Length: 304
Image 1 (cartoon, rainbow, N blue to C red):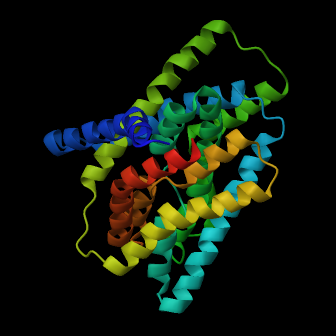
Image 2: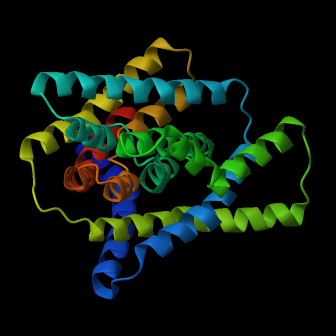
């Protein structure tokens, strides 16, 4: 690609997304709104319509199980790497949990999905939403577990999944899709209308969440390690899985780009709630989000 093409890709894909994050960031710094309420509205009202739309309209034909498989492979590969580093650097249990929260879960929803939509189009966007839904479930199980281990039982994490309306939206959509049940056109129009709100609202909320991130101690070494794992090693590991497994080229692109997203802001909330090194998790989330402006731009030049 020429330099002009690179700049065009940045302007057309990355800049609009970062600009919406900035709107949320500035709004929060200016008005100091209740981010938990805004996040809850997104998660409990709009996201279920988005995932229902994806699963109801989706033609899985073998792709969905592959997305689940590679999601789990990525997760366990990063957890293994973090545990290996914990042994080498003699991190305590809290440091290990903080690093896993910082590196094993990506911002596949309010960052990754818009990037896929702008860069690869509607067909790829459907894959991105499926991946986002799976990551949400994985994060609510493994993320809560690693944030709370020692203080809470694993059943708390399982329970959290079934508190989410999106879980039931997925189940309902899969049943309707599997048995080819036709939903009334007016209902589908309403679903499409609500789903269209989800992505921009998620992006604004992410900006608001970033504005609320605070940390007292900035551990340069651990933040550097976490950022490297999240932005470089995870997409590389995903690329290895993509070339080994029988995955279509478009899905492969989606998976690699999604895996290169910065640390998920949700893990910061988990870390705060369960006191799992929130300063470290917040630092990695903020730094990876800022650095991703460069790393995602470079990756899109390579992949698109």
